[in-house]
Length: 278
Image (cartoon, rainbow, N blue to C red; front, top):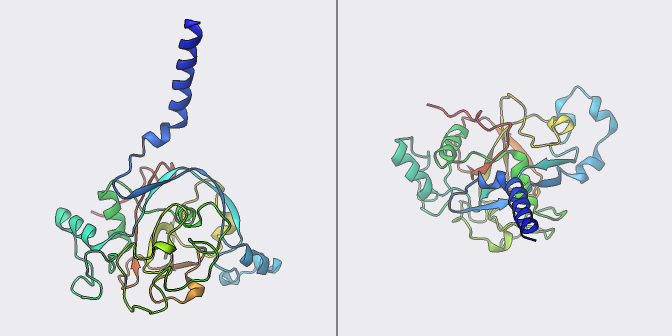
């Protein structure tokens, strides 16, 4: 009986050490939540239904809609910020690293300590996340955090966007303090994934990337001109704040509508390859 008990305890310890090995390496910093590994449908099935077969062979890169074709992807477990990075948090980074201040730091409409930081480039966002011990989320991770566990159109569900769920459509004409829209959070409890500010992701952008993207832990093309941004912002109308909406811009841009949040995960394709500017 003693031998059996020892064997059982040993097996349980060995098994759990394997199952939770990856998670034990992913110690989150304060303000993050865990997204468990799994497969989910990325992209829009509505866009897929509207796709004409000839579009797949069309040399015009823009014949394909930005959200199609819908496809299943597997994502490893990762942590992601519950809120967008605020001015207060970003200025700690600026002081500690002597980095450049955000472009709109002197603008009273965008410099409140609880508002999301705006006016920073992709590299600056990337550097902040590295400083915190994380990285920018991949586009697939971002959408998984937004989609939750249901086939829905928005982080909160399928109800149409309104002013109780998000900051959009020029209602405030500026950003709102992070976490202001509790009714708009995702199934994982993550705030402001629609509206307020669009968010930088790790990935380079390619219009037809969904056609040939990997089924496991996709992290975008190896190179490109534009970086993918997700989530819509305070200026966007309801058609541009749905969960699958994709946009892109040059990584050097600084504007009033673009911020970010950080992630932390064990994606082997970007681990150790996350270049940080000097």
